[in-house]
Amino acid sequence: MISPATNPEMVHVVSKADNRQHAVVKLPCLDHSLPSSSLRARPVLLGLTSNNLSYARGGDLLHWWKTYPVPPTAPAPYNDQSSWGIVPAWGYAIVTESNVPGIISGSLIWGYWPTSTSPTLLCLERSNPEGHWVEVSNHRQQLMPIYNRYERVFPDEEKDLDGRAWSTVFRGVWVAGYLLSEYVFSPDPRAREPVHPLGAVSKLPWSADDADLLNAVVMVLGASTKVARSFSWCLFDRPRESGPLGLVQVTSSPGVLQEVVDKKGWEGLSKTVAYTEIDQATEWIEGLQPAKLVIVDCGARDNVLSQICQRLQESALLSCKTVIMQVGSQQKVYTADEVQAARAAMASLGKIQYNTSGIQDTVIDREGAATYFGEVSRRWKEWLAHRASAIPDMRLVYGQGIAGDNGIYGGWESLSNGAVRPEQGLVYVL
Ligand SMILES: NC(=O)c1ccc[n+]([C@@H]2O[C@H](COP(=O)([O-])OP(=O)(O)OC[C@H]3O[C@@H](n4cnc5c(N)ncnc54)[C@H](OP(=O)(O)O)[C@@H]3O)[C@@H](O)[C@H]2O)c1
Image (cartoon, rainbow, N blue to C red; front, side):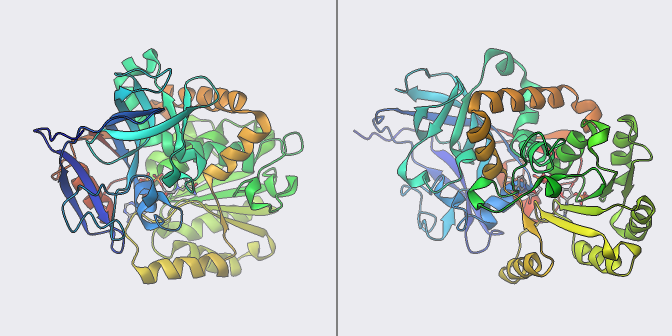
Protein backbone atom coordinates (compact mmCIF):
# COMPACT_ATOMS: atom_id res chain seq x y z
CA MET A 1 0.00 0.00 0.00
CA ILE A 2 1.51 3.34 -1.04
CA SER A 3 0.25 6.69 0.16
CA PRO A 4 2.14 9.93 -0.57
CA ALA A 5 3.00 12.02 2.49
CA THR A 6 3.29 15.80 2.55
CA ASN A 7 6.96 16.62 3.23
CA PRO A 8 9.30 15.41 0.49
CA GLU A 9 12.68 14.04 1.52
CA MET A 10 15.94 15.43 0.13
CA VAL A 11 18.80 13.48 -1.40
CA HIS A 12 22.20 14.63 -2.66
CA VAL A 13 23.14 13.07 -6.00
CA VAL A 14 26.47 13.16 -7.82
CA SER A 15 27.21 12.58 -11.49
CA LYS A 16 29.18 9.35 -11.90
CA ALA A 17 30.96 10.65 -15.00
CA ASP A 18 31.93 14.03 -13.53
CA ASN A 19 31.87 14.15 -9.76
CA ARG A 20 31.89 17.95 -9.85
CA GLN A 21 28.29 17.89 -11.14
CA HIS A 22 25.88 17.40 -8.30
CA ALA A 23 22.35 18.28 -7.30
CA VAL A 24 19.76 18.01 -4.57
CA VAL A 25 16.54 16.28 -5.49
CA LYS A 26 13.27 15.83 -3.67
CA LEU A 27 11.83 12.38 -3.17
CA PRO A 28 8.15 11.78 -2.46
CA CYS A 29 7.58 10.16 0.95
CA LEU A 30 6.12 6.76 0.22
CA ASP A 31 4.61 4.50 2.78
CA HIS A 32 5.88 1.02 1.86
CA SER A 33 5.42 -2.01 4.03
CA LEU A 34 8.57 -3.21 5.80
CA PRO A 35 10.12 -6.50 4.60
CA SER A 36 11.13 -9.08 7.21
CA SER A 37 14.48 -8.71 9.07
CA SER A 38 14.53 -5.09 7.95
CA LEU A 39 14.39 -1.62 9.37
CA ARG A 40 14.23 1.92 8.14
CA ALA A 41 16.59 4.48 9.59
CA ARG A 42 16.84 8.18 8.88
CA PRO A 43 20.35 9.71 8.80
CA VAL A 44 20.62 12.43 11.46
CA LEU A 45 24.33 13.27 11.73
CA LEU A 46 26.88 12.74 8.94
CA GLY A 47 30.47 13.83 8.37
CA LEU A 48 32.19 14.68 5.09
CA THR A 49 35.94 14.37 4.42
CA SER A 50 38.17 13.84 1.38
CA ASN A 51 37.35 10.17 1.81
CA ASN A 52 33.86 10.84 0.39
CA LEU A 53 35.49 12.09 -2.82
CA SER A 54 37.18 8.67 -3.08
CA TYR A 55 33.81 6.92 -2.69
CA ALA A 56 32.64 8.78 -5.81
CA ARG A 57 35.90 8.43 -7.76
CA GLY A 58 36.12 4.69 -7.09
CA GLY A 59 32.35 4.22 -6.96
CA ASP A 60 32.18 1.81 -9.92
CA LEU A 61 35.42 -0.07 -9.31
CA LEU A 62 34.84 -0.68 -5.60
CA HIS A 63 31.03 -0.77 -5.78
CA TRP A 64 30.39 2.18 -3.46
CA TRP A 65 27.67 3.42 -5.88
CA LYS A 66 25.80 0.17 -5.22
CA THR A 67 25.34 0.98 -1.52
CA TYR A 68 22.41 3.32 -2.07
CA PRO A 69 21.25 3.51 -5.71
CA VAL A 70 19.20 6.60 -6.54
CA PRO A 71 15.54 5.64 -5.95
CA PRO A 72 13.47 5.27 -9.13
CA THR A 73 11.04 7.81 -7.62
CA ALA A 74 13.65 10.59 -8.05
CA PRO A 75 12.83 13.05 -10.85
CA ALA A 76 14.47 12.61 -14.27
CA PRO A 77 17.31 12.77 -15.20
CA TYR A 78 18.55 11.87 -11.68
CA ASN A 79 16.59 8.59 -11.61
CA ASP A 80 19.01 7.24 -14.24
CA GLN A 81 21.11 5.00 -11.97
CA SER A 82 23.79 4.55 -14.62
CA SER A 83 24.56 8.28 -14.60
CA TRP A 84 23.75 9.46 -11.07
CA GLY A 85 24.65 8.06 -7.68
CA ILE A 86 24.43 8.76 -3.96
CA VAL A 87 27.76 9.13 -2.14
CA PRO A 88 27.55 7.46 1.27
CA ALA A 89 28.91 9.06 4.43
CA TRP A 90 29.80 7.84 7.93
CA GLY A 91 27.57 8.81 10.80
CA TYR A 92 24.41 8.12 12.74
CA ALA A 93 20.82 7.36 11.82
CA ILE A 94 17.74 6.93 13.94
CA VAL A 95 15.52 3.90 13.43
CA THR A 96 12.03 4.93 12.30
CA GLU A 97 10.56 1.40 11.91
CA SER A 98 12.01 -2.00 12.64
CA ASN A 99 11.21 -5.67 12.61
CA VAL A 100 14.83 -6.63 13.25
CA PRO A 101 14.93 -8.54 16.55
CA GLY A 102 16.98 -6.54 19.06
CA ILE A 103 16.59 -3.14 17.38
CA ILE A 104 13.60 -1.01 18.28
CA SER A 105 12.27 2.20 16.73
CA GLY A 106 14.10 5.21 18.12
CA SER A 107 17.46 3.35 18.40
CA LEU A 108 20.52 5.19 17.16
CA ILE A 109 22.82 3.31 14.77
CA TRP A 110 26.39 4.01 13.63
CA GLY A 111 27.36 3.16 10.08
CA TYR A 112 27.59 4.06 6.42
CA TRP A 113 24.53 6.07 5.29
CA PRO A 114 23.17 7.79 2.21
CA THR A 115 23.54 11.58 2.05
CA SER A 116 19.79 11.86 2.28
CA THR A 117 17.04 12.66 4.75
CA SER A 118 14.96 9.76 3.52
CA PRO A 119 14.39 6.79 5.85
CA THR A 120 16.70 4.13 4.44
CA LEU A 121 15.86 0.45 4.18
CA LEU A 122 18.45 -1.96 5.63
CA CYS A 123 18.17 -5.73 5.76
CA LEU A 124 20.20 -6.75 8.80
CA GLU A 125 21.53 -9.94 10.34
CA ARG A 126 22.90 -10.10 13.86
CA SER A 127 26.69 -10.32 14.01
CA ASN A 128 29.52 -10.38 16.54
CA PRO A 129 30.17 -8.77 18.95
CA GLU A 130 26.85 -7.95 20.63
CA GLY A 131 25.32 -4.79 19.15
CA HIS A 132 26.75 -5.33 15.65
CA TRP A 133 24.64 -6.10 12.57
CA VAL A 134 25.57 -6.86 8.97
CA GLU A 135 23.65 -5.62 5.91
CA VAL A 136 22.82 -8.62 3.71
CA SER A 137 20.87 -7.13 0.75
CA ASN A 138 21.79 -8.64 -2.62
CA HIS A 139 22.74 -5.33 -4.18
CA ARG A 140 25.40 -4.75 -1.48
CA GLN A 141 27.17 -8.10 -1.66
CA GLN A 142 30.12 -6.80 -3.70
CA LEU A 143 30.75 -4.01 -1.23
CA MET A 144 33.74 -4.52 1.07
CA PRO A 145 32.58 -5.88 4.46
CA ILE A 146 33.55 -2.80 6.48
CA TYR A 147 30.76 -0.85 4.73
CA ASN A 148 28.09 -3.41 5.53
CA ARG A 149 28.61 -3.36 9.30
CA TYR A 150 26.24 -1.38 11.55
CA GLU A 151 26.51 -0.80 15.29
CA ARG A 152 23.89 0.08 17.85
CA VAL A 153 24.86 3.16 19.83
CA PHE A 154 24.90 2.65 23.57
CA PRO A 155 23.39 5.25 25.96
CA ASP A 156 26.75 6.75 27.11
CA GLU A 157 27.70 7.54 23.50
CA GLU A 158 24.18 8.74 22.74
CA LYS A 159 24.53 11.42 25.42
CA ASP A 160 27.97 12.56 24.19
CA LEU A 161 26.85 14.88 21.37
CA ASP A 162 30.30 16.40 20.79
CA GLY A 163 31.92 12.97 20.72
CA ARG A 164 29.37 11.80 18.18
CA ALA A 165 30.02 14.79 15.93
CA TRP A 166 33.77 14.08 16.03
CA SER A 167 33.04 10.44 15.29
CA THR A 168 31.23 11.31 12.05
CA VAL A 169 34.32 13.16 10.87
CA PHE A 170 37.05 10.88 12.17
CA ARG A 171 35.97 7.40 13.06
CA GLY A 172 35.56 6.08 9.49
CA VAL A 173 39.15 7.04 8.62
CA TRP A 174 40.76 6.76 12.06
CA VAL A 175 40.64 2.97 11.88
CA ALA A 176 42.78 3.10 8.71
CA GLY A 177 45.63 4.81 10.58
CA TYR A 178 45.25 2.46 13.52
CA LEU A 179 45.42 -0.71 11.41
CA LEU A 180 48.41 0.60 9.46
CA SER A 181 50.41 1.18 12.63
CA GLU A 182 49.24 -1.88 14.57
CA TYR A 183 49.02 -4.61 11.91
CA VAL A 184 50.80 -3.66 8.66
CA PHE A 185 53.79 -2.19 10.50
CA SER A 186 53.03 -4.05 13.70
CA PRO A 187 55.16 -2.99 16.67
CA ASP A 188 56.28 -6.56 17.30
CA PRO A 189 56.07 -8.27 13.87
CA ARG A 190 57.86 -11.41 15.08
CA ALA A 191 55.32 -11.98 17.85
CA ARG A 192 52.18 -10.95 15.92
CA GLU A 193 52.06 -11.93 12.28
CA PRO A 194 51.83 -8.72 10.23
CA VAL A 195 49.08 -8.22 7.64
CA HIS A 196 49.64 -7.30 3.99
CA PRO A 197 48.33 -3.74 3.23
CA LEU A 198 45.58 -5.31 1.09
CA GLY A 199 44.78 -7.97 3.68
CA ALA A 200 45.07 -11.77 3.50
CA VAL A 201 42.54 -11.86 0.64
CA SER A 202 45.31 -10.54 -1.65
CA LYS A 203 47.35 -13.72 -0.96
CA LEU A 204 50.44 -11.52 -1.25
CA PRO A 205 53.35 -12.04 1.12
CA TRP A 206 54.10 -9.50 3.88
CA SER A 207 56.94 -10.65 6.10
CA ALA A 208 58.13 -9.55 9.51
CA ASP A 209 60.95 -7.71 7.71
CA ASP A 210 58.40 -5.86 5.58
CA ALA A 211 56.58 -4.83 8.74
CA ASP A 212 59.67 -3.92 10.77
CA LEU A 213 60.15 -0.19 11.43
CA LEU A 214 63.03 -0.56 13.86
CA ASN A 215 65.64 0.94 11.51
CA ALA A 216 63.19 2.74 9.29
CA VAL A 217 62.22 6.35 8.80
CA VAL A 218 58.53 6.91 8.10
CA MET A 219 57.57 9.86 5.90
CA VAL A 220 53.88 10.81 5.90
CA LEU A 221 52.62 12.92 2.99
CA GLY A 222 49.41 14.88 3.45
CA ALA A 223 50.20 14.68 7.16
CA SER A 224 47.25 16.81 8.23
CA THR A 225 44.66 14.50 6.66
CA LYS A 226 42.60 12.76 9.28
CA VAL A 227 43.89 9.35 8.32
CA ALA A 228 47.51 10.59 8.64
CA ARG A 229 46.86 12.23 11.99
CA SER A 230 45.51 8.96 13.31
CA PHE A 231 48.46 6.98 11.94
CA SER A 232 51.04 9.37 13.45
CA TRP A 233 49.28 9.37 16.81
CA CYS A 234 49.33 5.55 16.87
CA LEU A 235 53.07 5.64 16.04
CA PHE A 236 53.69 8.01 18.99
CA ASP A 237 51.98 5.52 21.30
CA ARG A 238 54.09 2.52 20.24
CA PRO A 239 56.93 1.30 22.43
CA ARG A 240 60.00 3.32 21.34
CA GLU A 241 62.04 0.16 20.77
CA SER A 242 59.67 -0.90 17.96
CA GLY A 243 60.62 2.09 15.84
CA PRO A 244 60.41 3.99 13.70
CA LEU A 245 63.84 5.58 13.87
CA GLY A 246 62.31 8.87 12.79
CA LEU A 247 59.07 10.38 11.52
CA VAL A 248 58.84 13.04 8.82
CA GLN A 249 55.51 14.77 8.25
CA VAL A 250 55.00 16.72 5.02
CA THR A 251 52.02 19.05 5.12
CA SER A 252 50.64 22.52 4.49
CA SER A 253 50.31 22.90 8.31
CA PRO A 254 53.75 22.07 9.72
CA GLY A 255 53.53 24.35 12.79
CA VAL A 256 50.63 22.69 14.52
CA LEU A 257 51.69 19.14 13.66
CA GLN A 258 55.17 19.80 15.08
CA GLU A 259 53.56 21.05 18.31
CA VAL A 260 51.72 17.72 18.64
CA VAL A 261 54.97 15.84 18.05
CA ASP A 262 56.80 17.87 20.69
CA LYS A 263 54.03 17.40 23.26
CA LYS A 264 54.19 13.63 22.68
CA GLY A 265 57.90 13.71 23.52
CA TRP A 266 59.01 13.00 19.94
CA GLU A 267 61.09 16.15 19.48
CA GLY A 268 64.39 15.18 17.86
CA LEU A 269 62.81 11.99 16.54
CA SER A 270 60.53 13.81 14.16
CA LYS A 271 60.66 16.58 11.60
CA THR A 272 57.65 18.37 10.16
CA VAL A 273 58.08 20.28 6.92
CA ALA A 274 56.01 22.21 4.40
CA TYR A 275 55.71 20.90 0.84
CA THR A 276 58.30 23.51 -0.20
CA GLU A 277 60.86 22.22 2.33
CA ILE A 278 61.41 18.70 1.06
CA ASP A 279 65.17 19.23 0.78
CA GLN A 280 65.39 19.80 4.53
CA ALA A 281 63.56 16.54 5.10
CA THR A 282 65.90 14.56 2.83
CA GLU A 283 68.98 15.94 4.60
CA TRP A 284 67.51 15.12 8.00
CA ILE A 285 66.72 11.55 6.95
CA GLU A 286 70.25 11.08 5.56
CA GLY A 287 71.59 11.99 9.00
CA LEU A 288 69.63 9.13 10.58
CA GLN A 289 71.11 6.57 8.16
CA PRO A 290 68.01 4.39 8.03
CA ALA A 291 67.96 0.93 6.48
CA LYS A 292 64.48 1.61 5.10
CA LEU A 293 62.33 4.57 4.17
CA VAL A 294 58.57 4.07 4.29
CA ILE A 295 56.60 6.79 2.49
CA VAL A 296 52.92 6.81 3.42
CA ASP A 297 50.99 8.87 0.88
CA CYS A 298 47.72 10.00 2.45
CA GLY A 299 46.90 12.47 -0.33
CA ALA A 300 49.94 14.62 -1.06
CA ARG A 301 49.42 17.72 -3.13
CA ASP A 302 50.39 17.94 -6.81
CA ASN A 303 53.57 16.08 -7.82
CA VAL A 304 55.13 16.12 -4.38
CA LEU A 305 55.76 12.40 -4.37
CA SER A 306 57.60 12.43 -7.69
CA GLN A 307 59.70 15.38 -6.46
CA ILE A 308 60.60 13.41 -3.35
CA CYS A 309 61.51 10.32 -5.39
CA GLN A 310 63.69 12.51 -7.59
CA ARG A 311 65.49 14.00 -4.53
CA LEU A 312 66.04 10.50 -3.12
CA GLN A 313 67.71 9.43 -6.38
CA GLU A 314 70.16 12.31 -5.99
CA SER A 315 70.82 11.77 -2.27
CA ALA A 316 72.80 9.42 -0.08
CA LEU A 317 69.49 7.56 0.41
CA LEU A 318 69.71 6.11 -3.10
CA SER A 319 70.67 2.69 -1.75
CA CYS A 320 68.14 2.78 1.11
CA LYS A 321 65.18 0.41 0.63
CA THR A 322 62.13 2.56 -0.14
CA VAL A 323 58.54 1.42 0.30
CA ILE A 324 55.70 3.66 -0.87
CA MET A 325 52.27 3.02 0.60
CA GLN A 326 49.29 4.44 -1.29
CA VAL A 327 46.65 5.32 1.31
CA GLY A 328 44.80 8.27 -0.17
CA SER A 329 44.55 10.93 -2.82
CA GLN A 330 44.54 14.67 -2.97
CA GLN A 331 41.39 16.54 -1.96
CA LYS A 332 39.95 17.29 -5.38
CA VAL A 333 37.88 15.78 -8.19
CA TYR A 334 40.21 13.98 -10.58
CA THR A 335 39.64 14.19 -14.32
CA ALA A 336 39.71 10.89 -16.25
CA ASP A 337 43.24 11.77 -17.41
CA GLU A 338 44.35 12.42 -13.84
CA VAL A 339 42.93 9.08 -12.72
CA GLN A 340 44.88 7.40 -15.51
CA ALA A 341 48.05 9.29 -14.53
CA ALA A 342 47.60 8.28 -10.88
CA ARG A 343 47.27 4.62 -11.94
CA ALA A 344 50.39 4.89 -14.08
CA ALA A 345 52.28 6.47 -11.15
CA MET A 346 51.20 3.57 -8.90
CA ALA A 347 52.96 1.20 -11.26
CA SER A 348 56.00 3.31 -12.13
CA LEU A 349 56.77 4.23 -8.51
CA GLY A 350 56.01 0.71 -7.30
CA LYS A 351 53.41 2.00 -4.84
CA ILE A 352 51.64 -0.55 -2.64
CA GLN A 353 47.89 -0.03 -2.30
CA TYR A 354 46.51 0.07 1.22
CA ASN A 355 42.99 -1.15 2.01
CA THR A 356 41.43 -0.82 5.43
CA SER A 357 38.65 -3.33 4.89
CA GLY A 358 41.04 -6.07 3.74
CA ILE A 359 43.10 -5.66 6.89
CA GLN A 360 40.12 -5.46 9.24
CA ASP A 361 38.65 -8.64 7.69
CA THR A 362 41.98 -10.44 8.18
CA VAL A 363 42.26 -9.38 11.80
CA ILE A 364 38.65 -10.41 12.53
CA ASP A 365 39.42 -13.85 11.04
CA ARG A 366 42.58 -14.22 13.07
CA GLU A 367 41.56 -12.77 16.43
CA GLY A 368 37.78 -13.07 16.39
CA ALA A 369 35.38 -10.14 16.12
CA ALA A 370 34.96 -9.72 19.88
CA THR A 371 38.71 -9.38 20.54
CA TYR A 372 39.33 -7.13 17.56
CA PHE A 373 36.38 -4.78 18.09
CA GLY A 374 37.00 -4.72 21.85
CA GLU A 375 40.54 -3.45 21.31
CA VAL A 376 39.80 -1.09 18.42
CA SER A 377 36.91 0.43 20.33
CA ARG A 378 39.11 0.92 23.43
CA ARG A 379 41.82 2.64 21.37
CA TRP A 380 39.29 4.78 19.48
CA LYS A 381 37.65 5.97 22.71
CA GLU A 382 41.08 6.74 24.15
CA TRP A 383 41.96 8.83 21.07
CA LEU A 384 38.60 10.60 21.22
CA ALA A 385 39.20 11.48 24.87
CA HIS A 386 42.64 12.90 23.94
CA ARG A 387 41.46 14.77 20.85
CA ALA A 388 42.41 18.16 22.32
CA SER A 389 46.08 17.06 22.31
CA ALA A 390 45.91 14.97 19.13
CA ILE A 391 44.21 17.57 16.89
CA PRO A 392 44.56 20.89 18.75
CA ASP A 393 43.91 23.00 15.64
CA MET A 394 40.79 21.21 14.44
CA ARG A 395 37.26 22.47 14.90
CA LEU A 396 33.89 21.16 13.84
CA VAL A 397 32.11 23.16 11.16
CA TYR A 398 28.40 22.38 11.46
CA GLY A 399 26.10 22.43 8.47
CA GLN A 400 22.39 21.80 8.29
CA GLY A 401 20.42 19.58 5.95
CA ILE A 402 21.11 18.49 2.41
CA ALA A 403 20.44 21.55 0.25
CA GLY A 404 22.21 24.88 0.02
CA ASP A 405 25.68 26.22 0.80
CA ASN A 406 25.29 25.25 4.45
CA GLY A 407 24.10 21.73 3.65
CA ILE A 408 25.72 18.59 2.22
CA TYR A 409 25.50 20.30 -1.20
CA GLY A 410 27.84 23.08 -0.03
CA GLY A 411 30.18 20.58 1.64
CA TRP A 412 30.53 18.62 -1.59
CA GLU A 413 31.23 21.84 -3.47
CA SER A 414 34.03 22.73 -0.99
CA LEU A 415 35.56 19.26 -1.09
CA SER A 416 35.48 19.17 -4.90
CA ASN A 417 37.35 22.46 -4.99
CA GLY A 418 39.93 21.46 -2.37
CA ALA A 419 38.53 24.23 -0.19
CA VAL A 420 38.12 22.35 3.11
CA ARG A 421 40.98 23.52 5.30
CA PRO A 422 43.11 21.10 7.36
CA GLU A 423 41.60 22.37 10.61
CA GLN A 424 37.96 21.96 9.51
CA GLY A 425 35.78 18.94 10.20
CA LEU A 426 32.49 19.08 8.27
CA VAL A 427 29.48 17.75 10.20
CA TYR A 428 25.86 17.84 9.03
CA VAL A 429 22.76 17.76 11.18
CA LEU A 430 19.94 16.39 9.04
N1 LIG B 1 43.10 3.17 1.55
C1 LIG B 1 42.26 3.23 2.58
O1 LIG B 1 41.84 2.22 3.12
C2 LIG B 1 41.83 4.56 3.08
C3 LIG B 1 41.19 4.68 4.33
C4 LIG B 1 40.83 5.96 4.77
C5 LIG B 1 41.08 7.07 3.97
N2 LIG B 1 41.67 6.90 2.76
C6 LIG B 1 41.95 8.04 1.87
O2 LIG B 1 42.86 8.93 2.50
C7 LIG B 1 42.68 10.24 1.96
C8 LIG B 1 42.55 11.22 3.09
O3 LIG B 1 41.29 11.05 3.68
P1 LIG B 1 40.85 11.93 4.93
O4 LIG B 1 39.39 11.76 5.04
O5 LIG B 1 41.72 11.65 6.08
O6 LIG B 1 41.18 13.38 4.35
P2 LIG B 1 40.92 14.82 4.92
O7 LIG B 1 41.24 14.89 6.35
O8 LIG B 1 39.61 15.34 4.50
O9 LIG B 1 42.02 15.60 4.09
C9 LIG B 1 42.21 16.96 4.30
C10 LIG B 1 43.66 17.22 3.98
O10 LIG B 1 43.88 17.04 2.60
C11 LIG B 1 45.14 17.61 2.29
N3 LIG B 1 45.02 18.18 0.96
C12 LIG B 1 45.63 17.68 -0.13
N4 LIG B 1 45.32 18.38 -1.18
C13 LIG B 1 44.49 19.35 -0.80
C14 LIG B 1 43.83 20.40 -1.48
N5 LIG B 1 43.94 20.56 -2.80
N6 LIG B 1 43.05 21.23 -0.77
C15 LIG B 1 42.88 21.05 0.56
N7 LIG B 1 43.50 20.05 1.25
C16 LIG B 1 44.29 19.22 0.57
C17 LIG B 1 45.41 18.62 3.39
O11 LIG B 1 46.51 18.07 4.09
P3 LIG B 1 47.98 18.69 3.97
O12 LIG B 1 47.81 20.13 4.21
O13 LIG B 1 48.72 18.00 5.02
O14 LIG B 1 48.40 18.42 2.57
C18 LIG B 1 44.16 18.59 4.23
O15 LIG B 1 44.43 18.73 5.60
C19 LIG B 1 41.44 10.16 1.06
O16 LIG B 1 41.83 10.02 -0.28
C20 LIG B 1 40.76 8.89 1.55
O17 LIG B 1 39.93 8.29 0.60
C21 LIG B 1 42.04 5.67 2.30
